[in-house]
Image 1 (cartoon, helix red, strand yellow):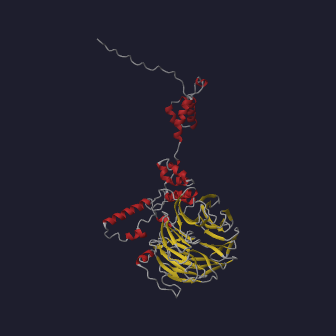
Image 2 (image 1 turned 60 degrees about the vertical axis):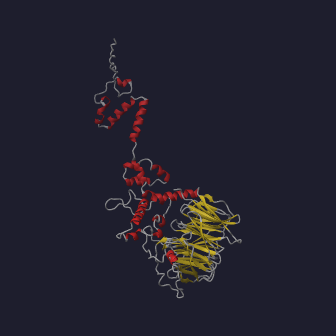
Image 3 (image 1 turned 45 degrees about the horizontal axis):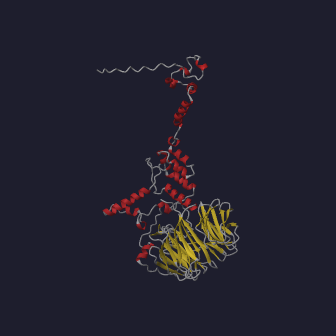
Length: 629
């Protein structure tokens, strides 16, 4: 018979020798401390120690008795306890002020991954606005207005007028979806302006964070990156007929004029040749592109009612479809959008484009050796008007921002002002004694440069000659105006700066050894860039009137020049398109492969059009530097 035997009980642990844990050497241990010494106090009474010295003695006594492994454990335990998330504990305003000193976007991107609180702080739109200002990324009204979700740029304000009327269910669903898209594009600053109720105030759909991402990515691609979107070889029946004389570029279209009287229109998005405009009898010398949309910016004179030309021809008959393209069948949108900021008059665009007056289609004007100015509808490719009046080659043309007013200069020594929406001539500007070679516009002021060695400043609304600028000793080939400053350059190799209000010469800038054929003036950046037939590009300061950089950009004449706050792009007859730093003048890279000659080069918002001669053929290259979505 099996009888289970119970296991003996587990013995209790043997008592360990006790000693005071507060002393690290034998001498101290054998010494009986006084009753008031903190080393003999129980640890639970540590919190009752009032004196910081007593508390420190208590902790030191414990640390002296610890082994290296125990000290390492204490260190690993204490280190996380000493960490403080200062951005979380500080007020939001101070946290944003600290983050505003971060000057690299990659650092901000890494900071946003630390915690949700840091992510919310880094996502604040004000912070990215500061970074945009730091990198001189300035958004124009087109960027601020957001995507055009309705055809013909129809505004939601017009829909709100009929909010009380019954709406078709399908259209009601469509408008609700489009409004939701607008809300998704909106960006509300977490710590930005607040209403009187203490709630965040959303005033704009524009996101500085998204805009900075696109602008910064584009700048990096322009420095090293980008790819050829499309390359076009154009047939040239006779030598010289394929020379590209002019270019206009916006975010939708690229327009080029050729010496063979043709105008080619390309898509700036896909690079595809959209259409070819024919009608001129001789070579095209100038093209200008008017962007669709915009608003009506009325001047001092109503162009429709009181022109000062008595021999004005009656308004031509325009088909209904082309009236729509010109915006003649709709009331004028005179309300200035909130996205348009600043009170200064807007200077002309270096890419030969201007803001529209509210018309639904983009418009092209072209000036030719056949003495005519033509107005085209980009969407249909139809010629709307043929404007006659000049008695010689029309050499240059510009259109005012937000007004259907074009100005042309001709070899007949006159300038003419046209209403391209009505197809009528408004006035003739007489004063020059020789060919008008170049012109520029800022607000309602026109500056023209002539072979008679003078520049003239005109009021486009009255036709009055405001100033005659004398000082050049030879023919003038390039002019620019921005606010109250006028720059001019010509055959005498000098560049002159003028006060547009008084007509006085402010400075005479030297440095070129040949014809000054390219100018870009920017009062905002405080810079003037000049390019000459000597291949040199010089950056002048508008504050000190001194040369900041002298760049040996090309081996022969500079044919194109364009800069922003960060980068400078030049093209030359040596067949190169080069990129330099605007501030330091350092070489960055060459765009495209070297060719025989570069006629024109234009860049805008990640799209670059290079018109050149390669292997004896006229080639149009369209490059994109936009970051991938």
